[in-house]
Image (cartoon, rainbow over all chains, first blue to last red; front, side, top):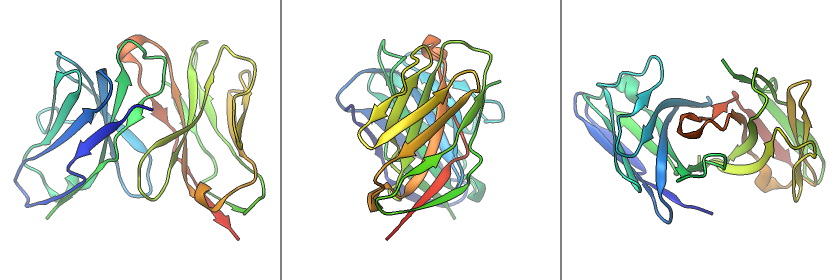
Length: 117
Length: 116
């Protein structure tokens, strides 16, 4: 199946700093990528939908100025957590849809654990 | 709004036995997709099985099968001959095929324990 990678797998940062998480589709083109957030023992909550070459669509309650999403190419999307605070500590997961095949499954990255001190 | 409900926060099954995980959903759409995802301790989401709503036949994948009841909006997952490696969180999910606006809606998950 298609492979999605995320980098870094885990990151620890100081409060007030910004952190960038990369999501790459390794062997396919992804016109649409999704960013999720998962707190311990909870489900995945969609943060935003990212389409290549256009602005991301954010879910209600997600601050677009805090969680900057860029989808500059068909194989790369980035999530930047700006001015991170301890409450931003979470597990962030990206997912990608194969271009032109949106009826099919989404492929998930392995996730990034963010800890803000 | 579409919602997905998993009423069993935790389930336990003995190795080699069969277990059924429940899922119900609410939608006004007639065409949609349903999924079961597995999330082991590694946190990697793995697709277990998929069902298209327009198909009456229940999907099966080796030891995994579903009981899809469209009228009742029910989509349960049966795991036969359970193995230790089946221990994980299982999420039921729903999606409508509306192009790039399509997105998965997840249930709250069921934690499955497999005992010897």
